[in-house]
Length: 172
Image (cartoon, rainbow, N blue to C red):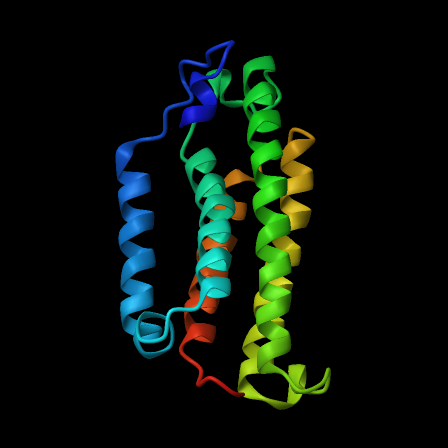
């Protein structure tokens, strides 16, 4: 993780390579299985920006969750420093993800009622609830709580829901 290599260097902040490889493979497979006709056939810059920024946010959470700070506590000074470093990146990635997601949703939904009356809207509503739960966990984690693994688990579910949303036809 590049954040661990910044000065002052945090030597233990190096997630295993398998975390990045697994996340990349799952992401590519998800796109190939669920979104082949929607993203790969008709390139959509908004979708690409959404997926890349979400990958930075959720992938960073997964990488952080794979780390074990000295003494096992995220309240240790080096662990806090790493969380602060990631927090700066995560906030930017989340804002871009949320903005592009909102724009994509307005393309798919006709009105607010579609959130509970269409299949796309229901999946989107569940995804938004997952993202909201991730934000709560991130705040708790930032305050020193041991929520990294649960946050990473929710990230996997949200990424899966995103792949499912990409499989819906152009108009809901």
